[in-house]
Length: 190
Image 1 (tube, rainbow, N blue to C red):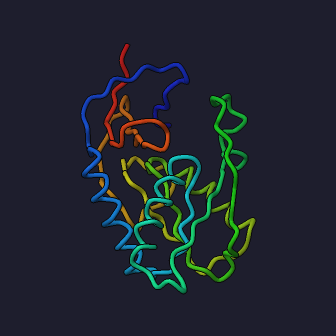
Image 2: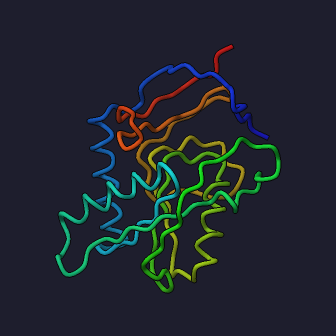
């Protein structure tokens, strides 16, 4: 089982993977790749919490390029109650809303998350979606793929790939959460 930081773990930033300018470029590239593969009316569904902000940014990018009669749609999913470690003493999770105001039945949806690691978050997000309907297809977009999968889940759209060690983590920091936009590699200290 991979190492998971305890709730009181202390991390130090080891390096900046993407600064704010690079993050903007990566999000634009990902948005255009999604539009090319899925279509300009893509249904992006962000996973609470950081995935929601990234999905909203990409919808904004695509909205500026799309037909005024259509355009990309945005939804959100909260996976808290679908986690397989919910009753295993994990730290209290932030609970956010699930908002799928457009039907997912027969739609090609793109799940959006900040960091893909073991694949368990994505599995839980797919479970949420299937409780709401039957999409035609589900694609996955993530800002960072750090490898070390426990489940056979792979992204279709990736910002950057980063190899991490057992005492490292990747954090996507966002202005929507009161942080400076950047992606950092952190290492456990102490």
